[in-house]
Amino acid sequence: MPGVEKRGVPRDLPAWFQQSLDCVHCGLCLLQCPTYQLFKVEPDSPRGRIYLARALAEGGTAPSVVLKEPLEHCLDCRACESVCPSGVGYHLVLEGARETVAGQVPPRFKDRLKLFFLDAILTRPRVLRLAFDLLAFWERTGLRKLTRLFLFGGLKRMESLLPPIPPKKERRLPPPRSAPGGKPRARAALFTGCVMTELFGRVHYDTLRLLLLHGVEVVVPQTQFCCGALSLHAGSRERAMELARLNIEAFPRNVDWIVFDSAGCGAMLKEYGRLFEGTPLEAEAKAFASKARDVTEVLVELGIETPPGRVELKVVYDDPCHLCHAQGIRSQPRKILESVPGVELVESADPERCCGAAGIYNIVQPEISERLLDKKVEEVRATGADAVATGNPGCMLQIRYGLATREGKPMEVFHPVEILARAFEDGRTRR
Ligand code: SF4
Ligand code: SF4
Image (cartoon, rainbow, N blue to C red; front, top):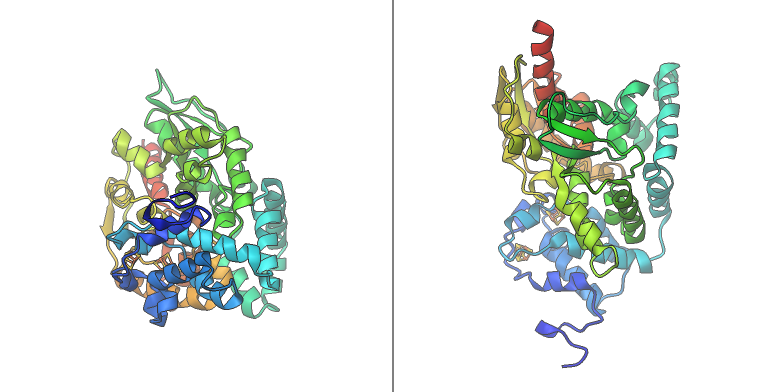
């Protein structure tokens, strides 16, 4: 029938609507959903949000602030996708619905602030660098300590979320390096992201060292951009596509892998193909996405070398949502930790439940985020571990903050590759 596609979906309905039709309303996702677990109401569940999104697309409901709220409460953690028997691509429905609402509901002051923060600071590497240079100055001169005395409410919380600013040399991109001796086993390009470089640049250096130790030649494109995930999740597809296009142009074609060490960025890089579907950049974007690999995937694929040193540490691994639910990566980070002599790996009660970081969710939805963090801290402390390992900068920040602001023994937070790199370093210094 002209104008109508299979399953009776009119052509002018958005593509994400197709995904929402796959939902059979079984409700299996409800108990996995962190917001449903908290509020026990349908609009704060995946199924409820799918209903709302469908009503929105079909014109059964007008985009409004009332509709916006349950969509904003969603962490986009994708835990619902991991259990959905119908394979509903829930994140596509959410992104589409958020975009529709953003295009039709006038932004509130806090929305404008969020978009300004994303568009003007976070996704512009030079501005972000300058911002962190200023933060480093603020800390170095003792002004940070002084300011703390006057902060309250949301600002006090934001200050506590920010860890000590790393030294400048750690906040610079590592140089490209060739694997020592002979022909490299593979060639990789390192994706560094935005905040990851400024706050956890040391992880990039460890990733680089480990890849070299495993015989991989590493190029590091010196001009690269935020992956675009934060913009996409905020309903700004245009900006997300612009950032993705810049990254596709910045990365060399002649590499085997595009390696990342941030789960959130990685999930987005793997989606570049879908983002450009039906555009002239589709083939290139698909080629880029097909090479994207988490560092733990690569090391396991290469076969993890046993480190010559030891790290005596009881570690609990916490799964970043965008690694386990979005990319299906669960065993590799654990294998990395198990390969380190001296490490005792333990499991918490629910390592796949979101810690409440979820991009900038912990800033824009502080109450829900704090409640989720309470549970997370309680569960990791119950394991008796000395440290938490997790592979996403947002989770690292959030869990560090949670541990520091709640009762209990001090625990450190690491990226899994930091612990493996430390064992190699220990072996080198013992020689
Ligand atoms: S599990 Fe999947 S099919 Fe079932 S209600 Fe949730 S989204 Fe729908
Ligand atoms: S993405 Fe997470 S918070 Fe959102 S509906 Fe799914 S399980 Fe719930």
